[in-house]
Image (tube, rainbow, N blue to C red; front, top):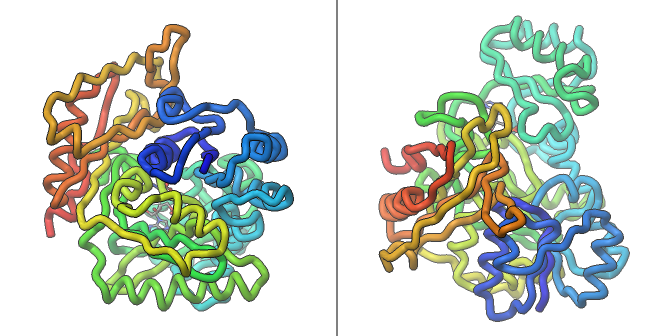
Length: 424
Ligand code: AMP
Ligand code: GLY
């Protein structure tokens, strides 16, 4: 089959990388793709949903996979369905789980899913009164999409009120902050859990752990993610079962009852507090950089997973997961996440070590090509070096070996990806 992938990051590159090895897949298209996805398929410069649907029809594309949240929240899946096309991702209605934190929190409450205690409000007075009853730190979140920046963890009551004020006035995030969530701070460890859903059934993929802060030891500001690994030993069968029974099942049943059955991937951001899973947030797409590791841990053809989810046929999926581990280390540009950096040429040394070349790959993200075809680092998160191994340690060693083979001015990365798992 021919497949269209919507998006331009490392996540979309990794989906294309997995599909490229899949016997069921012929041509791969990316819209818009990046400076390296053209080595896996063809980049298409379209973004209008109807134009993309027409392109899919004319090119006999059997499956479209949506990477990022923006097109999902803006209804790409509904447009493709109107054209009778197969597409992997949730409807606009179900994508509100990520598009609106207020919608998400209200769903969690309605469906009885454990989550942090919260207040939803558009009034500063109401927010301030609630904040004054809470213990610190206090979490303040803008309702709408803010490219991962809409969450403030305020150390004092005054900071929380200030954050609420800046959001509600529109100063911090424009309209996305016209409603806010104020919630209790949860102290535990975070997991990323992915349930691939077809509207009726679901498949849970190996749980991952992301590293959101820019510096080693989880210091510095939040980023989109500086590295991840999977599967994580920080979850066992008992915790998986709690997540299925208390989170995944009630959420999918509730959404179905409310007329918005979920298809695509439900990304559950969980905080584990004293062994209990508490939902921090839902996203309606794969995590980035978690997807880069998951894509090499699926042994059966990945096209089947995506296609069967998109066509309501997961009950007939026989998914084979690897018993190995994958660790991904993000190489970011110099000024990430504060400001953009000068474009820098990327040089990748030839990998002569067979063991490394066979057990690692680079997922390209913020890259473009100049007129001469030179690959340039142009984005904040430039690429992800993924190592695969029999243990987390081996996978991590390979990921960092690969990091040593990649060069560009201003290259930076965390040196401690998977530290929590290795300390176990
Ligand atoms: P979110 O976009 O809701 O996932 O928030 C971004 C990050 O903020 C999460 O990955 C957590 O690290 C942190 N965070 C969000 N909500 C809370 C909370 N209630 N308690 C502690 N940390 C939180
Ligand atoms: N890695 C976290 C995210 O994609 O939101």
